[in-house]
Length: 283
Image (cartoon, rainbow, N blue to C red; front, side, top):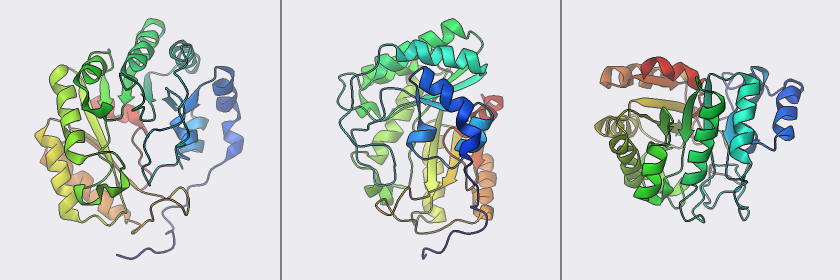
């Protein structure tokens, strides 16, 4: 499979003029979003709807994944005011479903688990009806950290596999089987909490490899899945090997539902938390 010019189905435009109101709110409360830090192509669509995926624990990651645009500079200590600020922003935005993520923080003794828990607690105190979804790192598979996260009060907890085992060189410091175990342990520690994962296509994966990954997720009771197209943030990042046709995304969605997934969002512009509220009907 050879890289080609970007096809016409990947023509979504970013409109900075639609960001002003959301940016003002985020700056006022010193809140970061993965939408901005990861250069998400859906940012204009989501910001216009006053929806964002909040990013806690700073904007610098302790790992060097070759597909990700998040900063690799030395991380700063967690901001103690961040949980309350995010809860207030959610109230101001009247969000019924809030998604919280973070960079990987291997430098913290608990991998940032306690800060996640404080954030969920603040959100629930101020926004009692809001559904909270967390998107976490592998927490180095530390069981105490994972147990805290699993019992934090969040209704959905996601951890992304990102790609098939053969291509894990793009995930520096990560291990496919460890990520599977993380999702499995989250489900064991709190069976009432739904688990979710996400992958990108376009690295050169085969259909059989993707289908095996999907079966691996089902084997650990992870039944929510997002599938999107990898788009290189810059020429310094991992190259796009293939621009996957929309029909292939539809194929994986349809076969995945037959396999036993409760909900799959699968399209070129799908991202982990894109239209995350749509998953709620399946939990």
